Image (cartoon, rainbow, N blue to C red; front, side, top):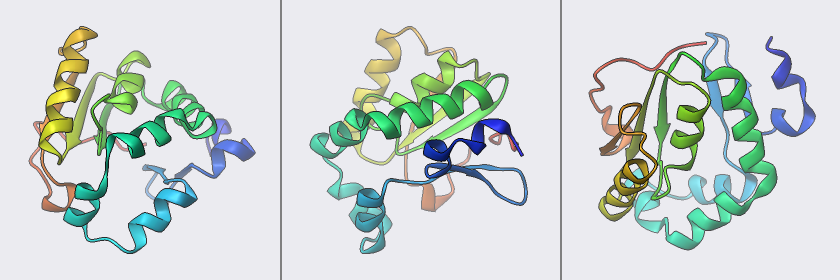
Amino acid sequence: RNPILRSGSLRQFVTIDATGTLLIRPTVRAARRLMTATPRGLCERYTERLYAEMRDDAQRTSAYEDALRHLAAGRVVLDLGTGGLALLAVMAARAGASRVYALESNAEACEAARRTVAELGLQQVIEVLEGYSTEQPALPEPPSAS
């Protein structure tokens, strides 16, 4: 097991499954929303306010950043539901990911994510794609396994 996952605060957000794939779990509040929604309905319910709540959740955001800092370097990363700020995609790129595919189903958020990536000069590393993860989008290359 990776020592970064032994941290109590990080363990509640991140785990590695039996195949060695890094899994990131949502917060309890987000998980409750997920339990009662269809994939498309869920995506339609995400708002700038919800993205801001997740972004501003210091414990959650720092746990993701710690995990990405330790695990993303040299890997191909897939960020599902990247949001307008492409926050986790940007963290993965800054942590040294070789390539990041940032998937977003909301057209407005997708365009905002593209602007964010361009403003940060990360277009060579991050590619923002519009679509639903449940439709298994074709990626130029598969995400890295652990």
